[in-house]
Image (cartoon, rainbow, N blue to C red; front, side, top):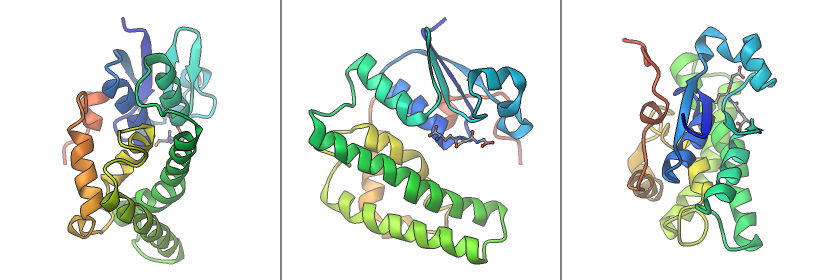
Length: 210
Ligand SMILES: N[C@@H](CCC(=O)N[C@@H](CS)C(=O)NCC(=O)O)C(=O)O
């Protein structure tokens, strides 16, 4: 049994952030699938772990974390990896974590969802599209000029932004139009320990056969 237990699901980009941080820091963990599709996140047993009814949750001894970004900051403290040298860079990491929520979470990720599962039009779609366009307009020039989001090495800012960035094509964009982002994704995938959502959070029978 590992010291860490990750509760999550391969469909969850937020659980993927925690799984990536565990994997990239070489931290062993047990994976407990929470079946989002069957409402497992709202089951009484799981609500005892996370009353918010969301994944991820990360248990380490007596410590129980229920926010993906807290799990990454906690693992910096535990492993000494993916941190920064001080408050100047730390504040920039905070900017990108906010960006991941505000522009990728409420933009790119929801735009993809609307295109794949919704009507793909209407005022809500337009809002997601405008938010996503704005976000890509911020991150693309930054990654054309910089190898990593903050400083000269990968930090939790990169881990926070990677999962949703991989939805680019599904959200209706042509990846070739975002060379900075695509080159950064390649660098990110080359980090030792990297795995896909399914590699790091395997669930029997997922994804369902088409
Ligand atoms: N603020 C949370 C958000 C977690 C979150 O939204 N998780 C989604 C999956 S990506 C979830 O569990 N959704 C299930 C639901 O809301 O019913 C974090 O960063 O960890």
